Structures are given as C-alpha cells and as structure tokens.
Length: 296
Image 1 (tube, rainbow, N blue to C red):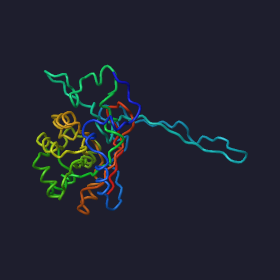
Image 2 (image 1 turned 90 degrees about the horizontal axis):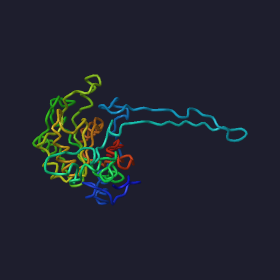
Image 3 (image 1 turned 90 degrees about the vertical axis):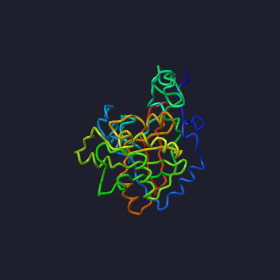
Image 4 (image 1 turned 135 degrees about the horizontal axis):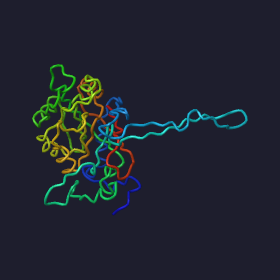
C-alpha cells in the first residue's frame, strides 16, 4: 500500500480536476468584472456539533505572553490552535468520502477503486482530498433556484425536489450558460430556512433529485456545490453522490454560504464569477473545509 503522499502533486489529480488546467483558470479569471469579494464559507463552528462529528474547539496556547527583547522593549505574543471536523462546516467531499458496495464487483469508489483504498489504513493514498490538486480556480455559475421559483420566497420548503426540468429552466431564465470546467453552485436558501427554525437543522431539505444526474454529467463540470447538507434533497437517495462523486469523480461541496452571493447576483443580473477554493493540504483526508470565495 502506498504511503500517505507528502504534498499536493498535480500529477496525482483524479476525476474531473484532472481534465482541466491553466486554460480553465484563465477563463475563470475573465468572469471577474468588479472585483467584489464574497465569502462562501460558514463559520468553522457552524453547525456545532456538526451532524455527529466532533465539535469545533479552540484552545489559546499563548495569551499576551510577554518576552524580553532588549533593555527597553518587550514583545507580546498570542497563539492559538483549533480542532475541527473537516466536513463539519462548508466543505468538500473527497473521492474517498463516499463509495458503494454492490454485488458482482470489487469496485467501491470512483474509477472502480476497491475498499483497500481506505482499509485497513485510515487514509486514502489515491483518492484523498489532495487528488483534487492544490485548489479550484474556475468560472463559477450560481443557479438561483429560490429566485427562479419566485412568489417572494427566501428559501425552498422542505424536501422540494429540483428536477432536471427545473434546473434547466432556472439556468435559462437567468441567462446562464454553463460551460465545460465551470463550478456550478445550487442555491436553495437552506441557511435562511434554518434561521427561521431557530438554528435547528430540519430533517427534510430541498435539493437536487436523480433526474439531474445525466444533465450534470453532460455539463462536464469541474465541481458542484450547494448550500444544503447533501446536495440531494433529503431524505436522500444518494443519487448525486453515486452518479457524480463515484460515477464521474466530480468534487461535491456542501453547506456553502450562498445567501450574500445570491443577493449580489440578483441585484445586477450577473450569475457568473471567478470562484477560488483552496482545500486544506491534508494528504489522504476524506474531506476538507471549503475555504472558498467568489470574486465578481
């Protein structure tokens, strides 16, 4: 079994990130028109606890520690550390995050990679978060399904299913053309719905349904992300995870903070932008915080 890789290496890219390079980056840069920067990240401690994962913890190691510098001056030092769930807040799923065990095949993960990718070792030597490369720099497109659904909605109710027809109509009505190598973001208003419920995460959430898989495969995306917990509507059938993460090696982002971006896109009717996201350099990890921004 291969050892844990020590650093990001572009030659190790797998899935959709392996299909795109500098030309895709340069095309993404052209989507920035005004220089407005919008964070796409929830706070690292939101939610806390994060769906059964360990809670966010911050520890101050040095607090206003004074050290002598010379006869008349001293230095003052503060230093802290944190413990986080890599998929506890706005996040990426690695290609080793999700697999399917089924009769008649030894393949579990993307590209038919077997269970030995994650067992017995507790990391993924080939399909960890580093398989996406050092970061995502591309044209982003927001599908504002909330705005498209209309009726003064701030969010989509319950298990509202975004099927192929709805997604196609949303993109067409807002004038968006998704191009190969884009990162598509799906806005459901999930965080606004959660706020209305007093911060409680509801058991049912709006999201994509299985009928969108073929459409999304045909778009030849670099990645797909949403503001809800699973991208699929929940209760979930895992159709997006099976069809795209396992089937296509397409990176999936969840729980992204998209309220501010959606408001900005509606204001000027421009739904594309430069999207930059740098996963943490934790070789072999099953996921990472998103660390994402939109630059309009």
